[in-house]
Length: 441
Image 1 (cartoon, rainbow, N blue to C red):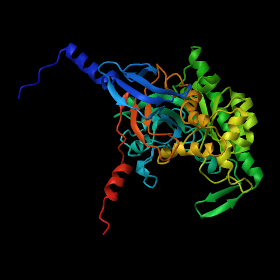
Image 2 (cartoon, helix red, strand yellow; image 1 turned 45 degrees about the vertical axis):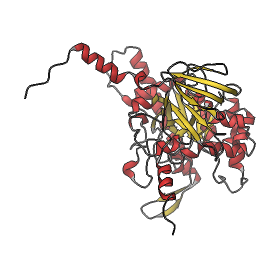
Image 3 (cartoon, rainbow, N blue to C red; image 1 turned 180 degrees about the vertical axis):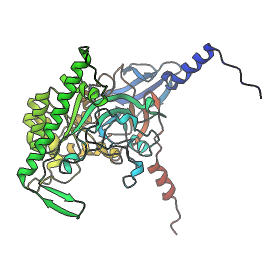
Image 4 (cartoon, rainbow, N blue to C red; image 1 turned 90 degrees about the vertical axis):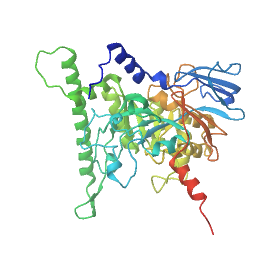
């Protein structure tokens, strides 16, 4: 057998350009005749959105569809920015009861050098289900739990990536690789479960406080070590020191260089997290915040935004009103706190719009609810120049619906991600169509 001819350098270069150029996969699209809801401004009736090479290039009522563009007829429909799940395990968690499909956490207490982007599974069956309900991008983040396991688990589980929900590879999906450093704030618990004896262990409050403070001191030590490491690396120290991936990654959060997302729920944890961030010079975003409403003045005073873990849940304490989870978002916004919603899960991501809708039924304005699932999270993560609204220059992540995306009866008719129209087909729909036609006799 004769060997294949060796390709010339020019041919190789052309092949590489063809394979790597993102523009080749993009479409020129014109969404024509719909009511466009930019989020950044008032709705525009009978408008056109022009998309070129993955980017929104023109929006308006008098805009004509460019020659050769693929036209999506949106007459009688509505055009919104794609919804942003501000904290999820999409692409990281598939089936909760099968550990082989879980890749949202890693062994070890401190893993600041790890990024969830390396673990995202683009072929996840959960992703099409979520995007069919309007979710086009998410913060794919490590799973939490340390603070709810009596202080166990990871304190720094790693860095979270912002991804869009379409692509063959993570490189095609990636919007921002290391968007935030995640810290799962240590818990202060007087009760713990002993797996050796399967009994609940009670311990003195003083012992719980001591362990809690030891965890915080350990976290301070890590940041101090990162500070020294950065100083040695930037000042050209003549002393020999080994490269340290953990400290190099953690040093980026110093002086607000990278946003830090701290997951905390209770009032004491929130107060301590805010004080810690100020002490260490961290650019803080609060996540979870089930009882953030109790510290709303503190959060508003310090300009700290909150990614809420949802409204459709039970109250956190016996003395709370049954509707406290429903009214908390409105209370935070009224106090001047910026909010966004996250599913903190994978399979629950599709229900994100309804978490916001529940808050609307209990005092949150409809406008603020839409912002909480679109542009607010983008602003919190420093990505508002790229996603979150329908404006020229932003990534074309768009949904075309037959109604309000917060309503459970609304259907997403067209889905555009990174300038490409994407199918809304998914496993839920396939099962529905398969089994709804079965014989009943």
